[in-house]
Image: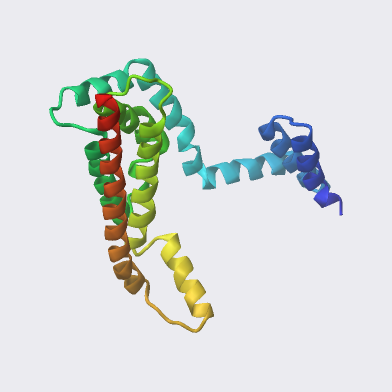
Length: 217
């Protein structure tokens, strides 16, 4: 039962609002000691877990890099680029991004874009520049940029046969006695992706219309 003391430490640490990293490390240390491991074995287990899941730590490199680029004017450059394109609107720009996101997700390239690496530093500022919004408190274009990324990847990734959602659906259907191949599920995800593209594109065009009407007032 002493091995379960790590759970109590996590619960108590989060209840007292201690640093989550310190709480988790303390819990792992206590659990290892209670299980009869020496300090060297516990540190070795930490090292092995870090090495096996090192791709998770890539975000700690990407996020500071994006912050550095933003500090040196990445968003300003993105706004200036769109401001020089005649006929550019927030809706049209986001429709292009939606198409790009769906195609890349359908090819299994989910991580090629996303909220931290593209929406916040590039797509949202470009859409705001195209919308020509003066009110800094207006979050509609930012929210639609984030929604566009969500819709694109959510309905595009199911076309890629080797994705977790396809395997999950196959497993659930098999539990009900329905045998379907992953390729069949991927093929039938195409009409859904097309419908999602058309529906969200219509929402983006309606956003353009609302913003244009507001500018005329």
